[in-house]
Image (cartoon, rainbow, N blue to C red):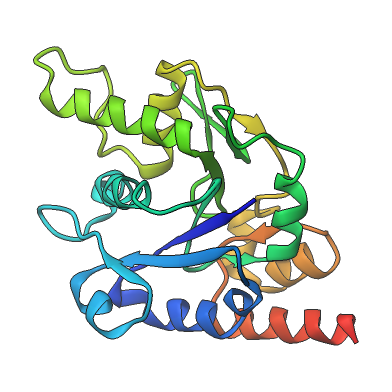
Length: 229
């Protein structure tokens, strides 16, 4: 089994990307691998970083296009599961391995923490979701069709990156497999009090937690290392 971890980033959040590299990414070892997908500047200065800047520039409502570009490129690599998250997310990689050992990479899989909008269940994008190769291909098919079809789907792909994924896979009859392990207990509280993020990993047993500031990344990593001793 090989997991490819793809972390969404951009130059404006470079501190977060650096914190990921200096903490939890160190736990990603062969056969597993990782990449950042950011902007042109980052691709020129960071290792393992793809320039996936949307056609009309970086913008929150163009993140679906940014992830689409990453997913198209990812199919040129060998992997069984692709795990996508944001650069303000801490990941306990060994627990992610344990989770995915229970799934068949040949199935159409979409795993994450469920949110809902307009009757569609989709995985929270920031804290991370998992896709298999066949699921990625089905998402790409819908995205491509929506770009070229005269009769557009009743959904603007610019709405949000994670909703775009859920909408497209729902159309392809790939249902979200829910897990609370890839989630932040209280996003509003986490933004205000970073102890929520620390406790989610250290006490709560989560695989990921989102809305993590760069300095908190180091604090979580140090706390986990102390627990291993």
